[in-house]
Image 1 (tube, helix red, strand yellow):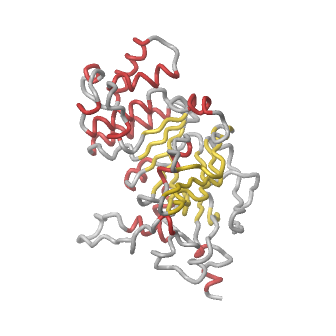
Image 2 (cartoon, one colour):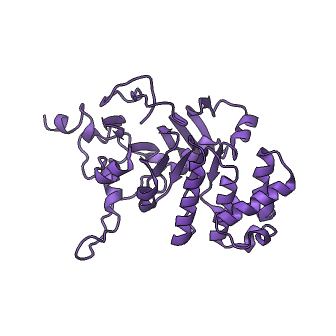
Image 3 (spheres, one colour):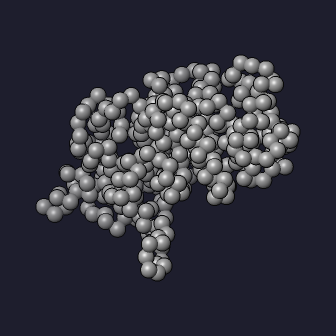
Length: 356
């Protein structure tokens, strides 16, 4: 999963010194990312040591309950974490070999929208209410692509049409409050894909859209990716059905950490982390003779200011045992390209250690 200068497989390593195999140069490499927020209640460790790779040509799904740290991870990539109260306190984010946390502001601004683009989760608040739709779509085009205003306008109309907005030329002169929530979501998507970015970060891109438009938007995103062999998508969503149909690999996040990463078929067919199994068990099934009650994960996501000292899922896990509450499990490879952070699969503290 995660690149390093090692060909080691199935290695349980000490906390904080996890060894990962090299699998070619990833498009994006996140190492030890920590993004914290200073609040009146204390320090909120929204992202607390995330390691993740996105490979050229793939769609990586990032899933987990609200409050797991998914959106903050995405905002950290483009250095969009609001400060104050937030700040990236540690880690590296390497895009095509460049550490985005170390480059000057002018360089990161030139990357946003052109090389890395993001579809934000809240279309209601992400558009400027005093600027027309056309001006907001054209802004990213004029900023990064040489050409006339007429060319930018034509491109903006084209992109609005491609995301399913009817009479796109007329919509160019309207303001966000004149559009429905679903239409504003489509405008956000048009802005994000206007320049065919090499990395598209899509944070709940289809939340406000009906099912038919969802399928069209996902197909459009995939077609944009396929135009460039190295292009990739980070898809953040709660919709596991979309993940199953769209993604190549899936990363499961909880408590500010990655808990499991695996190819999509393997994760759905043989999930290893109790949290992953809980998420999948909560899906409705239609293959039985009669409807059954949905399975739920006990409890709720813990207060981000008071996360457990050991495994972040230990307070809700029905399989927890002695080391879970006090000892953070390492992220280990338990199969080809399948990683999990759980003492059940840690040779030092897992099943055999538990029953010795």
